[in-house]
Length: 431
Image (cartoon, rainbow, N blue to C red):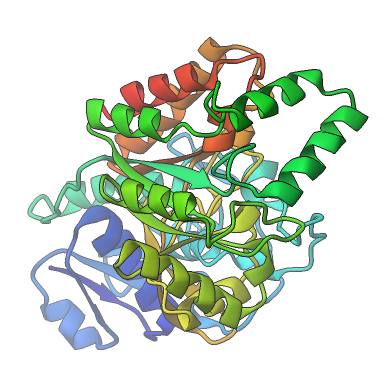
């Protein structure tokens, strides 16, 4: 049992300590504000405050975990054993920076509360993040810091007990448009055909007519292929279906279409199926609840997991809405256009609501790679090397590697064979 002494136990303090020690390292931890209890403790112990008590393992605290609300912070990047870090601690500290405040800053998405320019979908840009600007977005720094700290503690306390967790891989398939041409109804079908003709898209005209007359399979209908690959490579997979009314940004099949409903039920026999929340439900909790309930009635089981359209997260509102709609887990924490770790971690963690100063009952599962972030790459070998690099970093810290691919991209006819790319991702990521 690791004992941590501090001058004040706050919600932020207990939140980040439990994530670092229990969530990442598997170390049982207790907290105390009583000096006599700390001195009596004969096992591993840490002092986390402004001054050491004796000659113990001491981490000099920044003020962040003892404050409330959002404040203007002075962040300067330093180095700890080759890994970027911030919130320097000075010479007396056993480690050169406040790992706990730095971890809280990233996990809570503190910087996303600060003034910033949102993109066209109201999202926080990765280019505004401290990780992108200081070139550590592709590193799960919170996990790396935690394991480096563990090594330091093992030197001081060889008897410290910890539980090594297994590396995991999860493949997420986004299904916001299950079919390109099929099952879309007469009006949408004819309108699409006229648009193709107007823009001289002869290849699409041929494909569309071929699908209508059943001479070719719809290019987005890759579900048998995906299920067979997941079985072959023993992949833990999740399918997130959009189940919403048609709108400007929501263009899936009608939720009343029997073939679409049968597709969802058949996928649910082989894999976890959950909700890709619509663009329209972003600020509409009642609509979000309606979509959740409707999908649940199709698969005849509770829907507890969510993904938000276009990875459209605004803290804290997005997660408060998901909590109100009774989701328990969310898989939206990441960037669409950049590979890496938006919250600095590859370990699932609970959302901390800074304005309320409380841990919300929703677990966030950060993804590292979205297929759209790979589109600028010109060769399959380049993608393979990049995926191997990210996977190796996650595996090094026994984390969870999550990738997101869409059935749309897998069915596209771009310069790269995305089905081959996906097959290689599964082969290399699950080992």
